Image (tube, rainbow over all chains, first blue to last red; front, side, top):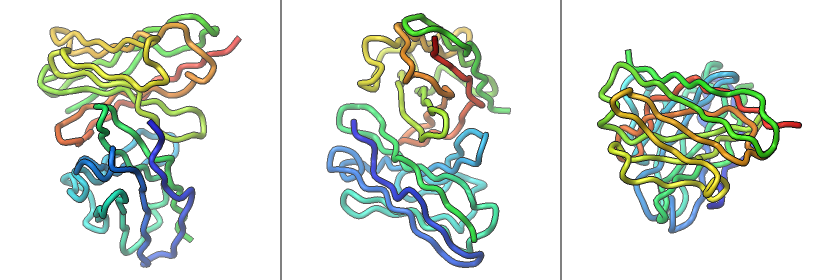
Length: 110
Length: 118
């Protein structure tokens, strides 16, 4: 049950777009369309922003989009805003009926 | 309002036990799978356990298997996590969360802090 691999940090200026990758294996990310992304601001609970690889829950900005290719999922945030500064986590279902998170990526808006 | 409220956290010594509770409201609790997820101070999210809507299917992370027990009381709309033989690396915030389906974990509680220290 190794954690999915995410970059520790990414940064971008307001208005720009950034991408966060999430690399797993054929036993998790590559094997199922059950990849989710969460946003977490300091001191708060995680918030679901993407589920089922690329679906946005109602109320989540369309500036957030995601996709998957093979064993790697990706989150894109376009039109970066100051409020997007947070930690982002991917997660996936696995072949042994467990779930696994990525190590998290800290997004800094410059 | 759909809500999850955790309770039961606290300071315990290594080897001791603790039971966390998660009270659900605003939705039909018995229809949903539920998860426990934890977060050590300054660290990332780690999945702990999940339980099927009727309690009939349960899985655990290797790190807690044999020590933690997840359960639920659908009549009370409450999820539990019995934590035994606690270790220092079990320290962290414990969140309960609702699985809407297809991996859509859409509702999270505010978390309860567990500290294991001598």
